[in-house]
Structure formats: structure tokens, C-alpha cells
Amino acid sequence: MAAPHETPTLSPDRVTAVLRILVLSTFVVLLNETIMVNAIPRLMREFDVTAAAAGWLSTAFMLTMAVVIPVTGWFLQRVTTRTAFGLAMALFLAGTTLAAAAPAFPVLLAARVIQASGTAVMMPLLMTTLMTLVPPRDRGRVMGNITLVISVAPALGPAVSGVLLQLGSWRLLFLAVIPVAGAMALFGRRELINIGEPQAAPIDWLSVPLAAAGFGALVYGLSGLGAENAAQAALPPVPVTLAGAALVGLFVWRQLALQRSSTPLLDLRALSSRHFSMALGLMCLSFMALMGAFILLPIYLQEVCGLTSLQTGLLLIPGGLTMGLLGPQVGKLYDRFGAPRLVVPGAALTALCLALFALTAERTSPWLVLALHVALSAGMAFVFTPVFTSGLSVLPPHLYPHGSAILGSLQQVAAAAGTALVISVMSGHAATAAAEGADSTGALAVGIRWGFGVGAVLGALAVLVALLIRTPATPPQPPVPETQDEGGTETSKTAPTPT
Image (cartoon, rainbow, N blue to C red; front, side, top):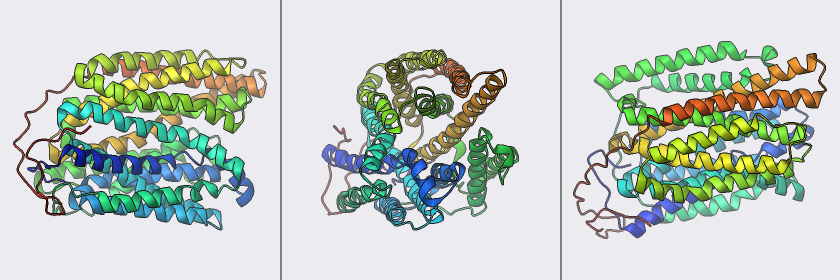
């Protein structure tokens, strides 16, 4: 990635081409984050494993992301853009190929870990490249276009898996991805160019295990807190969560110490910016509420309303498409009006929808659920694009990789915390309702309503934080020196304005 004092000089067409390659590749890898949702029952039968064991196919993916992302701040400064892209796609392709051929469940689980390692590199790479190449006046619009892809990919995962599972074996979930990912990898390696020069930054080897153990244990512990068999787990979630929090604290202390004398693995000076910290807080609260809703909705639609997994996936697609399609429009509005006028009404709409979800009953029409989910997704679209753009825009260029890594790491922690919180509340109130005489469906419906109530509270807190968000001042653009691309062609001296 670019050195702190450099500004890459590329033509607008070349900037657009670079971002398009990274966006499309990110879409492919993110699609696989949720593609396993509908395959769990079939995998349980084929490999003769429990639901808890099969659930590790998703948990391991999230854990790997939490472990790898903190290291990407250092990694993306040390290697070239092409090297980072090549490694990410190679890991993803290797994991996908291994998963398609997996003869046993442990092999499939290992393949998901390898897949997630590539995904963990791709997301910060995309964000860092965008912040490096795109001038501040255009970041909202470009980030909006990227939001389209980031939002639609996970939303399409369950529906795509439902269709492929109707056609044949669960192995199709991976076989169908291999040629697409392979084509993107080859095309990207041929067309992608390096952005700036890598920096020879030393690595603190003590920080690596602290980050891996701390964030990994924290996400694992939080994910297990709401599980029904948490008390019988081999690693009890509560002690693991506390140990993870302590290790993360040691990791933070180590980075602060390194900032005074050396190069930290994850530069926490990004947190000294009030704009970035407020955006980070709003992102965490919103992500906790969103992930809680995403966990509860399939349970509600299938176990209470009686829909099939395919029907559930199809019902949730319009919400993901709404969030994605609104992204470019919200980005343009951000460039014109700034963050506060977007995030406050977006957060308020999100909190309102979650409160209305808390009023659902056993006989609530799925069409009403669809309408609420679309409105919820629209509210989130008005939050995420301005938050990511305004939060990263205040950082100096040398902190872009670290800011992206901090956002990505805390996203995983927020997702695990939100999931654990709503599942714990749902399970507790469902058990209470069952003890009071409610049937299994009625008791589950009561628990789900309480879970959505927790999401509504998180949404209300997000509204309060949104009131503190401000649009950062646009820094003056430095003069752009004339450089050469990889082919030796001189590039334009004007700052890029991608389309």
C-alpha cells in the first residue's frame, strides 16, 4: 500500500478498474460467509455430527476473521497490493477446493478456516485501497457503490445455498464458486496494479499471539454465551470470554507501549480521533442490533411461522437488495449533505423497526415481516455508508490500513456480542414461558419477541450516538507527483475522480 507521504497518481479509468476488481472479488468471498446456513441439516446427516458441531462451520469462519483481521493493518503496509490480493484469493480458492472434496467433517471445518483467512485479508484491502485512491469529495459515492456489494453478498448466501441444495449435493455450494473465484483471481492478477510502495515495518511477535488468542477467545466466548448447551461445553463460554477480554487488554497495552518506541502491530492512534471513535461506536451498536435481528428472523420464520429454509432465504433477499441498492444513493447524499442528516434518521428507523419486530406474534403475516425487514435494511443503509466513510476519512493515509483493521476486528466482536445477547435473552424467556404452560411454538415466539426488544434497546442507544456524529472537514488535496505505473506509462498529474 502507499507510503504515508505518497499519493498514488492514476487516471480515473484506472482507479475505477482497480476498485471494480477488488469489489467483485470481495463479493465472491463474502457470499461464502453465509452460504452454509441452509446446508447444516444435510451435513449433520451425512457426517453424523450434532447441530452444535455443524454450527462450527459458521463459528470457525467468524473466529478466523477475528484472529486474522487485527494483523492486516501491519500486513497491508508491508506487502504490495498485488501480493495481498494474490494471497487472499489463493487462500480462498484453496479452502473452497478442499471443502468441495472434503471426505470428513474435520477436513471441511479446516477448509472453512482457510477460506476465512482469505476473506479476512480482502475486506481491509478493499477499504484501504479505496481510502488511498479516492479523493474525499468522492468517497461517499464510491463507498455507497461498495456497500451495494458488501450488503447483497451475505443476503444472497442463504438463497443461493437453498437453490443449489435443491439441485444436488451440498458440494455444489463450493463447486459452483470455484470457477468464478478462479476467473476473478486470474483477471485480478493480470489487471491489478500496485498502489504505492510497501514499508519495511518490523513485526512484534508478542503482539501476534496476543491478538490471535485475545480476539479469538473473545469472539468464541461471546458466541457460546447464548447456546443452549453452554454449561456442558468443553470450553465454558464465561471464563473464555473473560480470558479473551483480559488478553485483548494486554494486546492494547502492548500496542500503546510500542507506539512510543517502535512500530505497533495495530496502530491504535486512530482511536485518538473523536470522529473515528464515534463512528466506531455507532458501527458496533448498529452491528450488534443487525446481527441479532439476522439471527432471530430465520428462527422466527421457520420455527414459528412454519416456512421452509428456501422460503426463508427468498423472503430475506429483498431486504439485502434494498440495503445494497440504496448504498450508491446514500453515498451521493453523503457527499452532498454530510453524515448527521443521514445517520440520525437511519438509526431512528432501525430502532423503530426492531421495536415493531418485538410486537410480532405466531400469526403475524410473513408479508408484514418482509415489509419490516426491508424498512430495517433501508435504515441500516443510511447508517453504514456514512459511518464507514466519515470514520475513515479523518485518518491520515498511513493509518488507513490500521483503521480498516480496527473496524473489521470490532465488527466481528460486535457480531458475536449481539448474537450472544439476543440468543441468551430469547432462550431465557422461552424457557420461562414454557414453564408457565405455553406450548413450544408459543414459548419460542415469546422469547423471540424479547430478543427483538433487546435489539430495539441497542437501536435506541445507536440513535443517541448518531446524534454525536459530525462530518469531518475535507483536507486540502496535496499536489500529485508524476509517477509511472507497472508498464512504464506516465500517469496523469491530476487527482483521480473515479466514476
